[in-house]
Image (cartoon, rainbow, N blue to C red; front, side):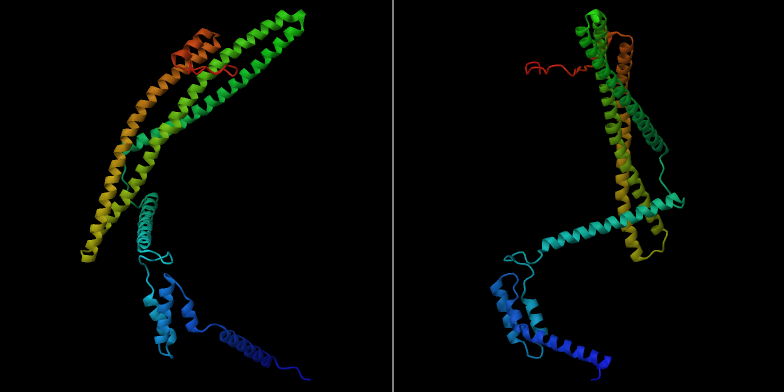
Length: 345
C-alpha cells in the first residue's frame, strides 16, 4: 500500500481542524442567548435591553446592530451603579494625576538640561558668593564636628572598658583579702583604690556621655536641619535658572501669536520659581545665623565641661569632678545604684 504524499497529509490535517472548529461553534450558545445572559449594572434592566435590541435588529446585521444598541443602553454611571463602572470622580482624579506627572516630567527635563549645561560651562548660573561661602563653611564645620564626635565616642568606649576592668580587679582583690590572712591588708588597700577609681571613672563617663550627646544633637540634627533647607534652596536655584534661561530664549525668538502665548506661560512659571527661590534664600540666611549663635552657645558649655572633667579626673580630684557634674546638672547613673523612689522622682 502506497504512503500518502506529505502535501496530501497537510491538507487532511487542515480539513480536520476546520471540522473541529465548526463543531465547536455549532455547540456554543447563539448570539441571542449571549445577549440575554450578559449583565452589568441592574441585572433585570440590562437583560431586557439586550434581548430587545437583538430581536429588533435585522437578520443580516444582527451583530453590529445588537452591539450598537447594547452600548447605547448601558449607563456608564448613575445613582444605581453597583461598582461595575468607574465613576466620573475617579476619572477626574486620574486626569489630575496625569497632569501632575506631566508637569513633573517637564520640570525634571528642564532642570536636568540646566544642570548638564552648567557642568559643561554652556549655561548661565545664578551665583551668590557670600551665600556659597557660608554654605561651604557649614559643610566643612559639620565634617570636623563629625570627626570630633567619632573620637569622643571612641574615648568614652575606652574609658568604659577601663572602668569595667577596674571594677573586676577590685572585686578580685576583695575576694583574695578574705581568703589570704597573711596578705589581707595589702589586698584590701588595692581593692579600695580600684573602687575609688571606678567611682571617679563613672563620674567621668557621665560627663563624656553628656558631651557626646550634645555634640551629636548639634551635628546630626541642628546642622542637618539647616543643610536640608540648603538642599531645597539649591534645587530651587536650579529650577529658577532653568526657567530663566528658557524665558530669555523665547523672548529672543520671532514675534508670533503662538510664541507670545508661550512667552506669557513661561514668564508666569518663571515668576513662581523666582518667588520660591527668594523665599528659600531668606530662610537659609536666617537658619545660618541662628545655627552660628546656637553652635557658639552649646560648644562653649560643652568644651568647658570636657576640660574640667578630664582635668579633675587625671589630677585625682574627686571633689572637683563631682562639682563639675553638679555645675552642668549631670545626674550620675551608677550601674548598682538603686532606683529613686516615687517621692524623689
